[in-house]
Image (cartoon, rainbow, N blue to C red; front, side, top):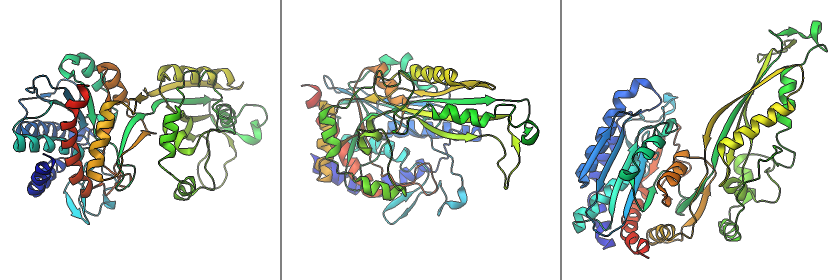
Amino acid sequence: MNQNLKEYFIHNRDRHLAELAEYLAIPSISALPSHRDDMLKAANWTAEMLKKVGLDRTEVFTDIGHPIVYGEWLRAEGAPTVLVYGHYDVQPVDPVELWESPPFEATIRDGKLYARGSSDDKGQVFMHMKAVEAIFETYGNLPVNIKFLIEGEEEIGSPNLPSFVEENKDLLAADVLVISDTTLLERGKPAIVYGLRGLAGIQIDVKGAAGDLHSGLYGGAVQNPIHALVEILSSLRGSNGVISVEGFYDKVRQLSDEERAEFASLNQSEDVLRDQLGVPELFGEEGFTALERIYARPTLEVNGIYGGFQGDGIKTVIPSEAHAKITCRLVPDQDPQEIADLLEAHVNKVAPKGVTVSVSQFDKGAAFITPFDHPVMQAAGAAYEEVYDVPAAYIRGGGSIPIVAAFSEILQIPVVMMGFGLADENFHAPNEHFNLENFDKGLEVIGRYLFKLPGVLAE
């Protein structure tokens, strides 16, 4: 069975790469209004390819933000249903002068496919389409029912997708959700992401006098907004890395012994991490390893701070205002809205006298987790191991993909994040690329996984 799939991928590799190059040539940049027509073109291309690989029904929804593409094949009677999610939109290409080849002309160099979207996420979406094609062409039918949901707004935060999923729960009903938009642990070492951190963000604005003041004429008589802001920021986190906001940790789900053992087995050296980052030492919440802090502990970070004179030399003023942007990475059971409200309450409580302090709430997204011992997770690990010849690692991701938590909450199904990229493939940066070794192996992994699912979901 699996040898037949492998041979199909080998024999059709050149055609597949040529088709992927067509997909990558469409500049589907969701953040730029000037590419609205390209967004529709990419959506239609996606729908047409889903038809070509054998799906019975495809539809492009154009009445909500950038188009959403849906496709299905539901003729495997009594078999489970797999929902595949991905996105066809890409990041802007600036600064374009740093690209070694045109960002929308797919170019292969040293076993890597260079183009915007090659790794994030057109290349990985395309692999699922071609795995379906290969099974149809080799065996005639799929072992599972399958649905595709490919959106065009992931790179701008998926603002419209949660409501679409909520309104189309019956259409999207499935037994498992599969996403390929993540990376391997390292080259040759596959990883399944079973958890992601959530997000809550605020901006703090501190206003003093009506305008900047001469520090000689008014210094000592008025509060300096930058000093006030620094005082507020200093109150948020202790020198031991523990966040000082009342109630912040109340709902944090603790790591299990099994998870800590799994993380320890990855043998990720903190000395190597320190050297890679170029810092004199690592820092964070006491009592946890660096990997545990990245994967499974909440954070509070000041992302930006500004106010006063920024030019060369010194300008002796008391600035009229100061600002800071803060984001918190959240873990399972923390509620993003509650955390944002706790942050706002804390800032208002500690605000110094003599200034006006206001808080604006921004990005919010819940954390996500599927137990790594869930059968659909273990089946994914088995499929990886059969192709890569090493056991798959089960990891959490330190970043946030809010739509993943929304899928899990709305559809009430396990989410399997099995990606094939590498962390150094420059997604979101010039010279984005996809290692074709993982393109080739990933196709086979996906095919094997689809054949494993009927067994584990029937148990």
